[in-house]
View 1: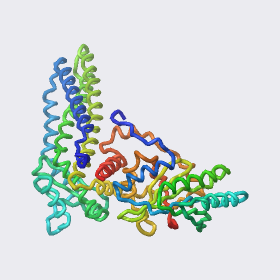
View 2: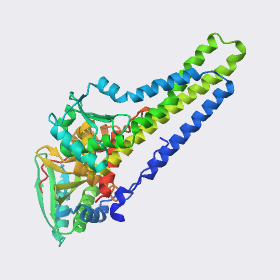
View 3: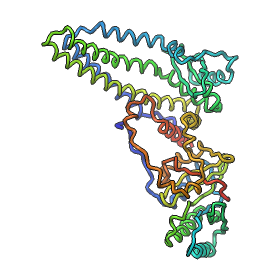
View 4: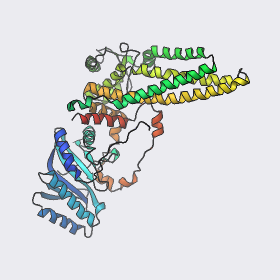
Length: 178
Length: 295
């Protein structure tokens, strides 16, 4: 339309933009990184298990983070890492995601998930490694989500972080184990 | 000053409105000049068209109440609704409008009336059931903004000439094949073409004005409640946007490769051009941006 203006958009599509955006989250929303983040990967056959060991080995030698590995009822492997610094979480998840990608398992990666705490509750920023975009997810009660808060987080961060603009792709991940 | 950034006037919208009205005014001037040049005695028709519109305007509240089946309700019947209206009008500096309720499950609301004093705000019972108090307050503030901005008057005025042009088209057409002599036919065809163009362009412009008045009412309503996100949330509930946010787990969806099946839909510009209301997605986006700027 003639009266429509083009919208400004962040072109930094990497996971690392999150460290900058976190400052905005902290200052404006008072949201804190809970210290937990995870990479969620679908289990596969063959050399997948050795890639898994390789990723674990990488996390073993990272001094500032601890981690645990869980398997959920969908058959997904969760690398759940704990660290005080969101920067360490971003670096670690990016590194182990690269490990899977380098061995041809890009399609097995579901998402990277970062947990934040805010006065209205806990919310997650989910990063899709295929579209290189984030979207917010705030579960409110069993099976329901706080869409209004999600939209607010989206509006606050959309100029700093590459967000999935198509909201019909904001698929929730229920029962995130952290 | 940084703190009050969100209250800043939206100059973009104001400028666009002024542009629209200017284009309309020029258009009508050209149209009337051509008529005068042709010496067409259509004054009775113009008066008739104007008369109809003025009558429609004067009786707008009664026509609207009658056609929607909205009933004026007292404070005893709907204390919660009245309380919300009372608090808003005090802060908006408006006389209290009459409050009406429509008994239907469809969530909707409207404001009507020729002036600030004789206005009516109506909501459906479905709206009251669907929304919580703060969301209802957001919707009512939006309707009060329509009253404060005299939107009914603005749209009526904008429609007057469009309607006259429409009558002209018919009258002129009738003239060509009717009693007019042959040498006048050329002039009449010109008049018809110009009337048609005038009607079509003003039709589009009125719709554009109507859409921007919706944005302004959203904005002014949000300024009144101080919580843009509440109106956004109400719009999400009314429009079913909430339902389009998926609730199905990503892991279930992933197993069907849904990410690659769903096609990206776009290109409804034409329908946008003809609609009186802006797309809800866009209204929600603007309201949430406004909310975000308050943090």
